[in-house]
Length: 109
Length: 116
Image (tube, rainbow over all chains, first blue to last red):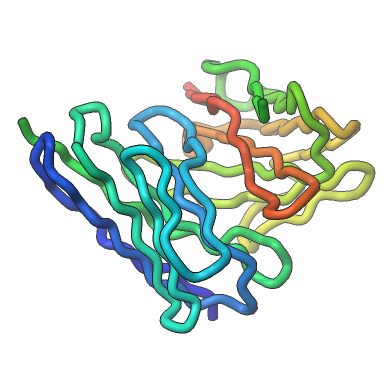
């Protein structure tokens, strides 16, 4: 079956760095997405990886290892506004998104 | 770019009535749109895939006669919740998928439905 695993909840301190991990098992693979979702709002697109390696975009970076079925989202210089859920989603061979349950990130002052 | 609108943002209706939710891609065409439901503190649950000009594909357990989907154009999909009941109260979110790789989905702001 198809499956995405990510931690349910993480806590970090303002100004610090946090890494949110995601492992996936899908029928075929056409890339991995990270979305951010604030409470009561719809998800917003953060990043896309299809090749192995690190993609950096400002304070946020995303890494992919296709051979390990593994990705992580790295958030640097954490701000209070980064408190949100972070959703990992893999694109399968039919270009359907398989969603993880999301990681709730709590930022403390 | 890649803006998706959703209307209404909030709706309260009485049990037994029907509610229509519109999802529009404002600056791009989307052959495929998706409808999700999200209960408090839970993850997104895909309800159905909406394809322009053809019938929607529903996920297992989602009643197609209760959740009517119409994708009449490349920029508009509608979800009608028929004979709504309190258990249908939820946050409904649509997304529109770009018609080119990597086919990322852009989400509408969501519709909070409350059935009394």
